[in-house]
Amino acid sequence: MDSTFLALLEYTKAALNQTTSSIHIDDEEQFFLIARQQGLSGMFYPALGKSTNESLKIKLRDEFYRYTKADALQEDAIIKITNAFASNQIPHVFLKGAYMKRLYPNTSMRSMGDIDVLIPKEKKLNATKVMISLGFSKTSEGPTHDVFEKGRIHVEVHPEVDQHFDPLHLKSLIGLWDRVIEDTLFSYRLNDIDLGIYLLAHLAKHFRSSGVGMRQILDIGIWENHVRSTLNNSEWISKLRETQLYRFYISISWLNQRWFNIIPLLNDIEPCDISEAEFNRIETYIIASGVHGKAEGFNSTLPRFTSEMRSNPKSHHPKLSVFLSTVFPRYDQIVISYTYLKRHKWLLPIAWVSRWFNWIFKQPSRSLRKLKEYNLSDKLIQDNSELYKKLGL
Image (cartoon, rainbow, N blue to C red; front, top):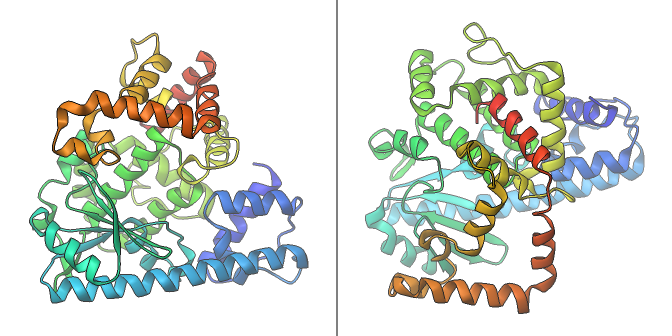
């Protein structure tokens, strides 16, 4: 670990423990950049000790205020949606950041982009009417979620669990409405095990499709602390093995111990066989990636190439397979952008051509940059595939 990464870990632990740290930061510019890319920069300001330079304090103070303002707006929207859905008898479950932020010492610590809420399929039309009555505009509609926007607030209303999850992970979440726990009238939360599987499935999806950052890893550790005294370990292990997420969970759990001193739930059951050198490679990869693979300079096609190689180990052309799936996406992947396909599925080839036209004439710079990302060495993809295998993906 380099000194900047170590400082990042120390300030994260201090923030989570609601204390302060005075550890020296060698490269303040790099520290701030990585903190933002990893989704952690908004939590550090209260944890700063007296030795921190004033210029960094100002940057982190501004991040803290930005996180706090966004959190206040999102919390207000969540309360209004909760009340409106309850008044209209729409059962709902807030997912991902909208729920996870409540498990952090302060809700503003956990940044999020969209507010994700799950509803029963049959309530989709009612939910749309309610969202519009709250002043939201419906900006897109898809098979897994509809998007609503109001100013800076973005809400995804899901009539079902994310269909982009691994089929095994989706299967384990079937019937979750029969297992949800009621918080208030018509407002529910996932039970401990379903929440754990959902978080791991979502994390695995991003590992395979775009990339992940430290905040996404930390969510698993925060969940562990939340369920530590209530989780049935034997049921949890059974579910992990059923979904083939067991090794992946163990790897992420040990990462949280290594980084944030969060004791693994299954510490007495399963040792971690990841070596120091492999841990360093994993850390380097996650730092390079950032949350959702959006760190500057990260090649976001690498996770997709890696996933393709892991899914089809006998394939000699993973880059070609990914390229073809990008140029000729499946119906369920493109219908959210070309809604006329809902009525006329046979127009799928026309949607492909329309997409190509946009790439070539409306987004030429972005398209050229994406094409250049395909110029990755086979060795790099193979090395990353071995890393994913070690993680249990």
